[in-house]
Length: 336
Ligand code: EPU
Image: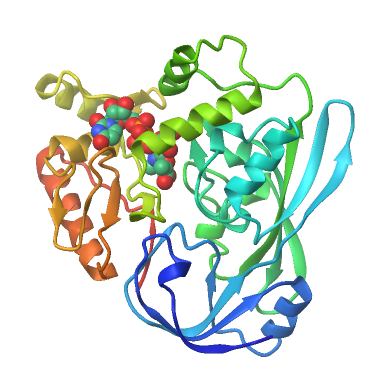
């Protein structure tokens, strides 16, 4: 185990924020992690760094989880269960499933980050959430170093949320995630408008898992910036829920407001639309800005600090509150 000192974290977070870790260690096995935890408990966990905004140098020991490997647990004619170690790259794992014709994750192609963090905010895109395939999340308890696991139910998955962001926050380190995938009779989720349009443009009427994955990759590439080219953390805010009454009031002023019905009393509004309507889309503020093709994504033009991006986020929140009486909740983890 090699503890490094004064390491820049610029290449370890997709926003590309240049803060320093006083001490930094990469962990390649569960045993190594348990050994580390027997000596150090005041740690800062870093996985793919794709859902965080770093605003300061990190004083705690930064632990980069880099445990690799995929194991088949169970298999029958219809389904397969695989356990994937936390340090595997998410998109590479999705491509592995698509190439083997294992169904369930194809709509989640090209999401940045590592497998170990996918349960944290229950990543989702194009009509699918990762909770739909997760069977188990294995963890090491920071206090005791003991290995334990959470079933799908005990993870308390919700929209961009789970138990790991709430009740048990900072108590466990995710070491692997198990998924149940289909080998035949795949359930295709193609009803999301943009996927249908993309498949139609390629004249595909009976898509394969690869066709769907390719369509999702094309859609994401057309509106979401590649973090390697333009620092970002995907959607910066959650899509807010508002009451039907509030929605009807807005509808009279904004007849084209897009919405998704959630229940008899609540409606979800795309935050990207609210931000675009407020005039922020494509605008640059110093070193950061709002992406020109998807207003829900804040971008770092190269040298932005976390605090600059946070200021822009607050400006957006205040404007939306004033204009629409809607409180936008930040989705990305802000690291103070
Ligand atoms: N819209 C605008 N202007 C914009 C962006 C969006 O008007 O600049 C409106 C459009 O009406 C559009 C609607 O918002 O039809 C929805 O947009 P989009 O399909 O791009 O999805 P989203 O609601 O903005 C969510 C997820 C994304 C995910 C997509 C596709 C959240 C917070 N974000 O975005 O997830 O890829 O749906 O399923 O739920 C992420 O979490 O990092 C992420 C990228």
